[in-house]
Amino acid sequence: MTPPVTDASSPRRDFLTQLAAAGLATAGLTGCASAAGAASFAGGSGGGAPANVPGGRFDDSWTAKVRAARHKAVFDGPEVQDGLPVFQAWLFRQGYREALGAEEARAAVPVVVVRHAGTVLAMDDALWAKYKLGEMRKVNDPVTGKPAERNPIARPRADAPKPEGDVARITAENGEPTIVSLIESGAVVLACNLALNQMINGIARRSNQKVEDVRAEVHAGLVPGVILQPSGVYAVLRAQEAGAVYLRSTNVA
Image (cartoon, rainbow, N blue to C red; front, side, top):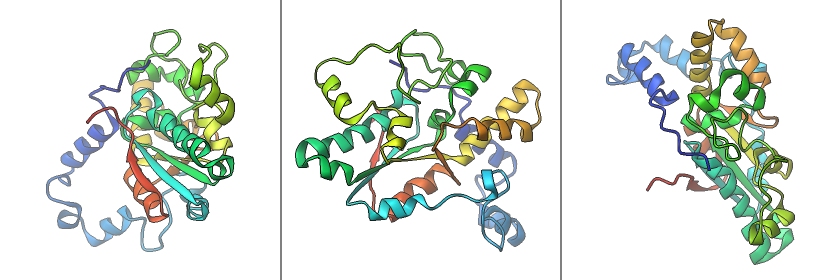
């Protein structure tokens, strides 16, 4: 099993360090930023998203699916935690299948939010291999026990141990607990753009590349179907506005 992320150089810590250096963290954004700066931070007077998002705008269409669902829950994943938010979303739907039947399971829409250190789970195998993300985030491959060179929960793996007992039965009924399987079954998976950009900046710095080039590569290399949101905090709260009940997916009390 992969251990929890303990890398001190986390996206949130890096971001807060930059805020502190700019004099924003303790003074508060409204107290020290000009009206023009505040408008820029909020996306400008014309609204919309910054240019560092594919297509230039954040996708909000997923909220319609959540609102229309009879059953919906948002699983907040600030850490890697062995892919716990994905596993819990999988169990959420399976619970409806076992308790209320297949029709109710199909009416259940889980929303997974990967943010903070967990944002690395939005990045697909090629990025994990090229930039040694497993080593960087202290995530071990559950099969090899070595630093992961591919996203350990992106998709089903042929070399993974075969499930047994109830897990084998549930997998046969509900698919495997992976990001791709969840999305294909109608779930929503959201990722924190704020944390992703901090990772992009770090990768560009370490690899001596232009930030813009790394950003384009990372955007093209996300797990298919993952939707970027302005921040993980926004994504979690937006899902709750759409009617999803909240569960924090963490092993830490």
